[in-house]
Length: 254
Ligand code: PEP
Picture (spheres, rainbow, N blue to C red):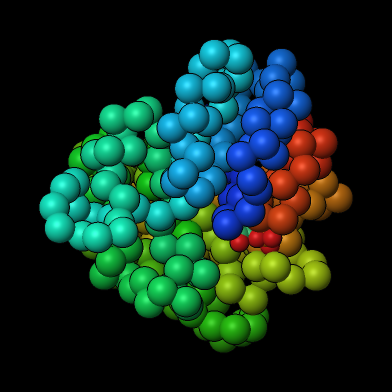
């Protein structure tokens, strides 16, 4: 059995108005597991993060609040960007880094991912590094190389001593927002390839501590079997995380 604590993160993207954010927190109050057994997080738009941290503390909800993106500099002249130091200052737990939508629409590269991972670790934030596979469909001939390149380039500058705090989210571009997730064999294989890549980059000991999530068309119908896979230690969930009942059902599967 895995000694890694599973991490389930909802990625709300650019959804929800403030009243819906509060309603969601109210609905999950008293329903989350002990964070030592299962860690639960929600990634939301920056405008909500400070209030989400405060409300979850007030309501005693063991949920970690995540950003969906950060800038790599702690301060300076970067109009419109969000400082990782400022996020840490308001007790945000971490951030998704390099989500496929950011790579595709906002020209995020493995280079900027690397800078943001380093900035996260410097500020004590957990970087949830999304490995998007740079393809638009499943390509069996490429399955070893795509995650390897993103990990090798994106994480090359990371300090080995801090690397165990990274979380990898295997989120193939072709499975995000799709009608179904890949087969369990594909996900299991990707998990193994990613852990092997991490071992090459950091050491096996560090790789064994890094949590690997799966993301892409996860629902309450497939979450349990995905979480049962050897190298998969959690989920990054888009659409199905927007409704509290569905989200709680997937959290309970961990
Ligand atoms: C995502 O984009 O992070 C994601 C996992 O989306 P969905 O679950 O909706 O496929």
